[in-house]
Image (cartoon, rainbow, N blue to C red):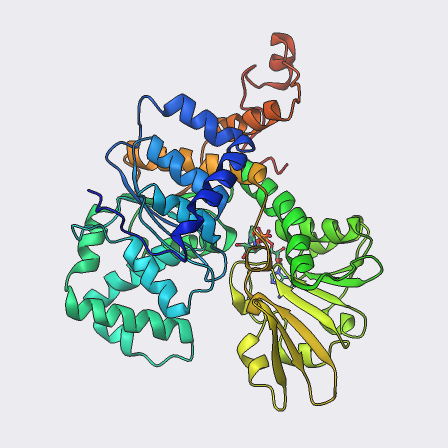
Length: 468
Ligand code: NAI
């Protein structure tokens, strides 16, 4: 059931502009359009109530409308306070799809939006969740636990965000007792978009806490080896440029972490002729960085040299406030990993004698008593979505086609509680659609060749352990 015009966005008059950009994006999202053509008639998501917690961008609007076209009843919130594109949210609201998202939410508003998006007008919850980073999943699990043992909400914590979540859950416990158990009763599964959210899922599964089956979309090859690498290769620099207009050529940059995201970021900055340094904890990734021609250093080594710092680790406290205090004057610091704890922003704000000046939204200058200044982008939140508009449509089409297939799997199969990846045949199918769109011509195996390398002519072509 859909209430009429159930939404909260920044400015609904932006809907026309949003619609025009959605039209452009559709041309670049062949996987989603093919999914509409293939499944639009059969409506494999008919009857499914889907809640999304994923950056409310133009590309996401194409995903949302695809899920609706496949029969789902969708409600949406963003998974970051800075990542919503207000015209995209307006266009979705205008279509009477409930959306609760605007650029520049407070953390209290963010968690309000998340809960609102998972509450249907009749008080029921979603059957399926599309999550990015795991916040929607976390909220439900914590709410469920708190209904069993409310004292978990009283444990003292320095974590501001957890304090906000706890306050929201306490209010729910008081006003609608049993709300979270009811939500879990209807909840059939979650598909998770990103590395950090997937880590959270595996941890929950290991601890025996996971309440529903989950699809790890991130580790489809056509997701992490494309979005994380080639998406960041384009959107990192877009974020840095829009924020600072700085010339990249000739600068020295430190990329912290050389996983998929780090590889894309390093390549982008090298392409613009920066001298790129890499820091890593994993000898395999460090060796890969060396083979690609980068110097592998520690952050401490880089402090006297680097002009630009980018964290890509999915880990906490990678750049400390102390590191920042020792950086070169006019250094730029940003994060492209999922959460803002890669850089110690709170400690930076409290650094003795530091002066903070806001230059424009999502760009702050910190000046230390010694006179050196540093620019922090997007308050340490993901720079490509905070300071620019995230990845291009084409690469998001790969990711979101996987999301659509994951949602179909979860709705139509009775999976046991666990964390799954999509079958390789589907991964290859997603790739095939995008190869065709770019005019690539695939070579077809002869029967003899297929037998010689022991794969079916139609694929899958690689064993599960192949690393691409
Ligand atoms: P990954 O696991 O492939 O790479 C992370 C790398 O960081 C690993 O190689 C790890 O060894 C290294 N690392 C961990 N701690 C470190 C430390 N203290 N210092 C130096 N290196 C360290 O993960 P992936 O896929 O590259 O994702 C990284 C983060 O980016 C995640 O939080 C993910 O959710 C996020 N992400 C963000 C996107 C965006 O558009 N902003 C897109 C895709 C992923």
